[in-house]
Image (cartoon, rainbow, N blue to C red):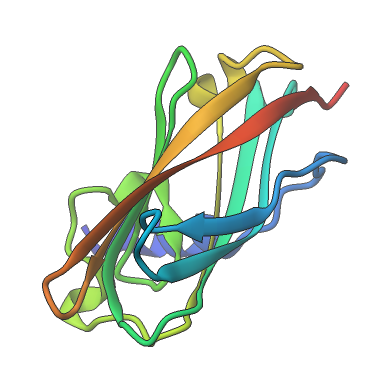
Length: 154
């Protein structure tokens, strides 16, 4: 189990060899009448890099501490990233306690990427939805949907 965690740490902080040229960015709004909790720094989806490459970075802009954050890319084959005990996004750690039970700092930045069947099932030129769910340290939850347009990396 410890060996698996070490492997996750290497993957979590590794940088993909190639990155897509276009991105979608904007503000993630919790609700039309509620506060804004996150800013989308980048959100890219490229088909062709290890089947596909989805990269996203969310930055907290509110005063609440995040205890768990999940992003689900809805392509024909779903792809998911979750916060992990190591402090970032990692698709392999979904279902494990985030942050080792300690909430992430307010205004933390969450960066992650995933490759393979999920992002690879996208079609270049098509937009896909991403459902983002944040559980905060105070027990509240926020959910919103953003989108990303798939590009070809080849």
